[in-house]
Amino acid sequence: MEILPRSFYDRNAKEVAPEILGMHLVRTIAGETHVGRIVEVEAYLGPHDLAAHTSKGRTKRTSVMFGPPGYAYVYLIYGMYHCLNAVTGPGDHASAVLIRALEPISGIVGATNGPGRLCRAMDIDLTLYGYDLTLGGDLTIARPSEPGEPFTIAVGPRIGVDYAKEWVLEPLRFSIAGNPFLSRR
DNA sequence: CCACGGATCAGCT
DNA sequence: GCTGATCCGTGGA
Image (tube, rainbow, N blue to C red; front, side, top):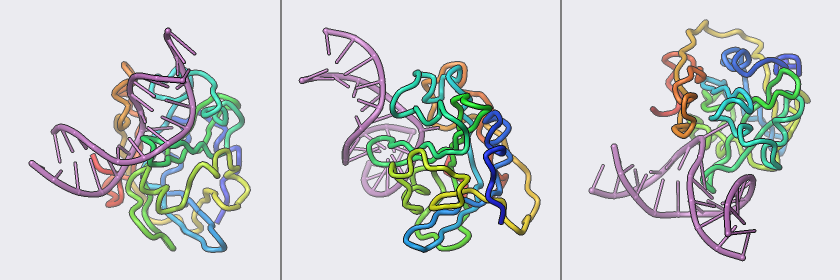
């Protein structure tokens, strides 16, 4: 199992997003390891992308995205759910990839087909805001040692961004075609 | 200070 | 398909 290095994240979110499909999200809590295969993601490109949180400028909430890539951007949505992103680049480009769905591999309890649900199942909250994903610590992303079955990548518009004007239909949602653990819709 | 709304989900009709 | 839950970041006064 190879921990993805910072150079993996140090590219445009549009390039990183399809390549992160099939990678393993590894969460360690109190010595227990939970592993899920990433099957659905969305790219948020930067301040010019009206669907991205960084389009509102640099704030305390979004500050981690304005820094170097390879860190976790976790935020609270609708007062009840957390969402996990990996900050991408290049450099301090203020872009990120949202992890939307996982296929359970080991140790996972609860549903993981949706960004809010997977954070609940993996016990991901604001304490992991800004966590370095390249350390191989409590939260990391790794290339599985077994490549697994080849898959087709499905592309479509992002979910829940109706406010984003001309960006609503941008094909920035990537998923493993036909995977049974995709989020609904 | 106060008001607003969201990168969601579950439950009901 | 529609709505309520639930709360903090954000922006305007």
